Structures are given as structure tokens and as C-alpha cells.
Image 1 (cartoon, rainbow, N blue to C red):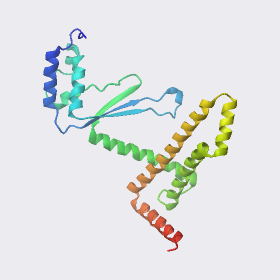
Image 2: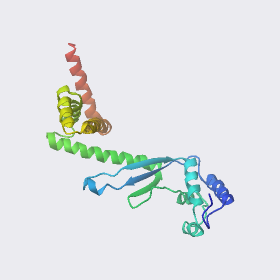
Image 3: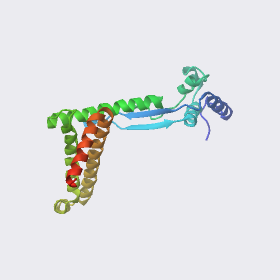
Image 4: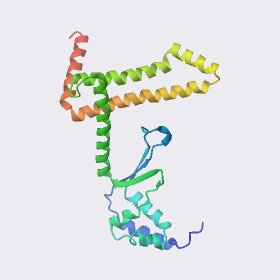
Length: 235
């Protein structure tokens, strides 16, 4: 395949590859996070998807070389010339996936982990606030933990019965068949399964959140559970 006009030749690409490899530290650990904007059809509450790609020294060098292969003299000038240090190499890392519908950020693995921790904390605080408001309990109470298990347990049990209860399944199948929509029966099953797993995951996320930020409260909860197990066993 012929290279584009004014782009580097094979010898120049090889030289660039050797250059960037020598400038990238062996300890370099980066993450490229691509975020797609929500689909307008999902409404104001829609969430976009994300793709996380980890980049070590080899992948950083490969991404920089790929960008260099398609560069023109104008591109090189725009980026400040060929890199002379690691910061310069990062300017050449082709993040990809850039479009009107997405943005991509390049960050160190340390910064990414910190941002993910903060992101998870805020998400859990939002879920916790909903539990507090719905069940009228205090966040730092044993009643809150019980409400977490009750709330998500009810959702998971309801979705499980939707798929596994014989009478419910028969009624759903008869209705779908009468409408000539047997595929709808199975797609409803898949959707119900996803709702069940989402509820179980959200419950586990909140419990992990409490273990991290309210360890004394969780210790009291575990003590109470142990005491109740002992009572049931007659001890």
C-alpha cells in the first residue's frame, strides 16, 4: 500500500520508533479513557458508555508511531517538532476514537485510579441517598444496611421470579405466542436477568462502600449477624 504524500517513509518511521522507545520510561503506566456522549433518544437521564485502555511503554510507543506514520510536515510543526523528552512523546500518542460523539483523556494510572475511586464514591453516595429517602433511615445506622439488603433483594427476587416462576412463565409465554412474538419472551428474560444482576451488583457496591467508609458500623452489623446465627443454632 502506497504511503500518503508528504508522510514519513519507512526509514523515518524506524528512526522515530527508536527515538520514542528511548524516551519512554519503563515505569510509564497510562490509561486512555474514551467517553461517548449519551444518546439523545435516551432522554436527559441517559448515560454514555466508556472504554478504558491501559497503555504501558510498548503500547505508548506503538500509538505514537502510528500517529507519526500519517503525519505531514504541518502536523509535526503543530506538535512542536519531534519529541525530545517523555512529555513530548505523549503529544504524539494517538488516542483514537475522537469524534463529535466522544472525548478521550490520557492520564497516568495513578490519576485514573484516584478518579475511579472518586467516581465510585459519588455513585454510591447517590444510591445511598435514595435508600435513606425511601426507607426513612439514617445513613450511619444498622437500619440503613438492612434497608440496602431489603431494597436490592426485593428487586433481584422479583426479576428472578419473573423468569423462573412456572405460572408466570406460562402466562408470559402464552401471551407472547398469541401475539406471534415468541422472541419477545426471550428478550424479556434477558432484560430481566440484567436487572437482577444490576440490583445484586449495586447492593454489593454499597456494602463495599460501607466497609470502606463506615468500618465500625459494618463491624456492628457483622456482630449482630453472628449473634443471630448463633441464636438460630440454639447456642
